Length: 283
Image: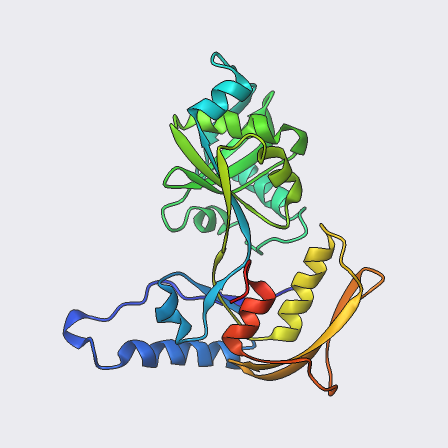
């Protein structure tokens, strides 16, 4: 299932023109354009209440784990050596970029990134990408921002702890946070007993513009890593892109989402629906 997405980057108004309503007008114009273009899900970053006005809220689930020198010393030893080698990825590393793309697309959820734009995308917003090799062969990659790991994958998941320890030492960290999405439970399980502490965090600001398609896609994604109980619920959503009444059901562990004329079990505003369906904690 392919979800059409579009993001908003910088939002700014010249100091001399503030208070004139230009930001509101431009934000609403951008979202209207997305709706007309058939966009399913949109993303941005910023302050929560500011972008609540424009239909965005914090959604998604990441497990954020912290690591320090004591964790590394007790688990991997004081004089540890590493077989995994890291190198800062460069735009000219075409072979490694191709391997990263192939590894990413082997997972149940991934962003569609052209090979020509791949380096530019994973290096955006001041992020640094590193490629890992083991015995000279491609082994995985990691993307860091301000010293914290925001994305990483490797070809052999049995070596996730060693991968993080080698990366920790390579960048010379005294502490590091590693964020893992909920749909990669093997990565969480491998690190949760090593880290100093962990927390459940939202991924980003999103706005759902097509509930049937987005809920269906993420229900199918959830079914890849957890058992889902059978049942159904009918939700009436007053969405940003329009009214939708959807029936969310699971039969024999297989989820489905469809439009329906059945009486709703819940009637929800746009923000309430997103919180109920996608936030770690519903408010």
